[in-house]
Amino acid sequence: MLKQRILTALVLAPLALAGVIFLSPAVFSVLTALIIMLAAWEWANLAGFEQSGKRILFSLFTGLVCWLVSGLSHTLVLSIGAAWWVVALVLVKGYPKTAAYCQNQVLRLFMGILTLVPAWFALVQLKQFDHTGMTILFVFFLVWAADVGAYFAGRALGKHKLAVNVSPKKTLEGLVGGLLLSLLVAACVGLYFEFTFARGMGLLLLTVVVGIVSVLGDLFESLLKRERGIKDSSNLLPGHGGILDRIDSLTAAVPVFALALLGSGG
Image (cartoon, rainbow, N blue to C red; front, side, top):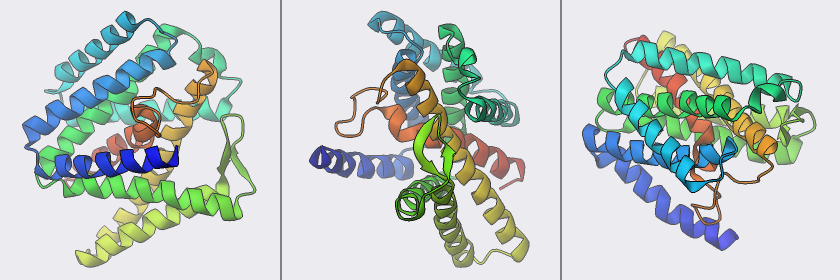
């Protein structure tokens, strides 16, 4: 299993980085839409649809929604995405009392649209904002740092459970450790580009918000997998589970980051 994880990561990581940096915005838009459609295929299973035909249909429908919203205001789409994560926070915090809201299959499909489409839209907007892809890589590194920091801090210091009914292994100490590592990444970027004090403080504040929201994305997928009774969203990625298992944190963090960045004028 470990060997599979390493080999898959060695293949996918360079491809992902190259795609973010070198693809044109148009090609990047199409490629990320295809990835989101694969994630939608997995989401249909989380919603309780096992039949391949229905899962493919939801995947195609998600792609259609991405195309339909592509011309809308970024403020509108990203605000809807951010508002959805406020609702998701209520569902996670109140679980299992809120489980009833996650048991309707159609409602769970709608949750998938609210999760996946704004994430795609945010990535496309960020690529158009910065063709080099460095802005996207920055938010990726913030989320990865939050994940890595939480893992090691949680293992070494974790005592107080963060959401025991949803993901028993996550702890408050892990959350703090992840935020601290993300803040370190952001501070290095701010110092390198010689941000003003005000802009630097804004970046650090945004980093905290992004770090917290990224954990929420992970927790919400864990909630749905718990309700569905499965460990991974699929087995598309050997040793890593499914696409959703790899991007759950990003689906929450990227729309919030993009809304803040684009809303402030960059």
